[in-house]
Length: 576
Image (cartoon, rainbow, N blue to C red):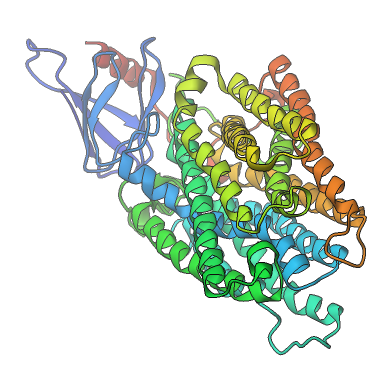
């Protein structure tokens, strides 16, 4: 039986008492140095190597394998989170997902076909948003790693709250007509009106995204638990997209029910402004509720790690200190910390960046141009810009439930490859069938399942790259997102500049234009993603130790020493 008590001489010392067996006459105290958030327990080899996280009020008993097991009121980061905490975490990106669904699927359609902006002007707005997001993302990631949080809030949740407020205050203005503008207002003036709202929205979106992603390696350390958490996160992303498209379908349906004018049924125009405005307001209302659930259900310590309970403000310094290393030397060895500058010298950093960038290009560009393809190339009624994306994300939602088991069976890289095969199958189908019609539903299933798979696996690989280097995790996610945003914005701007119709929404030449765009942004980019995946299979993701900065504690703080005698006694007691 193990129990522990906090010593009076040091805030970071505790007494471990062990009854070695039924014949033991008394408990033997073993003193070790720990941080207030946990200790290192004896592993199978007798060394101090397995991390066990406990709270001050918890107790632990020896497990069958010699490790420490028991209750503490705190989730073990080596395994999966409890279901309620997992769902609480997954709620945190729901508002972002709702807004992103509208942004990528309907922004070009709204400004080009509804408000009547030129192709390049609509592209400039999307590019401005992507550039703002791309610039804000690494800066927010860097500051998020350095910040100490606000009040009783941890640093990740503080940035998440700032981002949520920014999104709520700006998004509704983006999908509405310019206030005070008329038909005689110059297009450059309308462009200037929308730009500030887009910049504020993208800042908030980036702050929410990076802080939410950076929580993954702090919540769990097990590889498959990261995949599970990412899969739940993506499942909520799919639910958000399904909700947006379902609501859009209902809004279009009610609009058509009020008027039998064929123009309302088949084409987009200024009469659809109320539809997009109401959709954006509904999105903000629903997303705000889910953000509140995230802040209530996910607790983060002031040191940045997510916990099952709140620590007092006086514990912040102690939470930042590293735990014992796997050595039994007479002094606590330094912890290997990879700072943001060191990431730039890691080859695996660039491998994952290219893979993540390619993945986002496939997902975002296909989502951006699928509406144009449906209306202008296939000539389908406008309700299809809600139903086809809905089918895509339903298939993605269903596929998210088998990703954890599949990645365990064949590995993350091969699961990603299977997703690429589905995306390539969609591209090949679109290339061969230029008059697809109702068969587009089958193609949408392939694209939805493939996109979901490669996105979850790429995020899982990013979490694997970070590993236990959570102190700079937000910078890594920020850098990945930086490449994603800039390349997506540049790609959209290039496509818009190449558009053959300069004066009208769609001339006969745009029929084949969007046909080949859908082929290139899926199949063409999938080839690039496959090449990046090959480099990872040849040179697996790992951290080059030569580039790691070894320090003796986070922010230069020194750990107290643990004698080798006490370490041996702790190991022997656990094996008894």
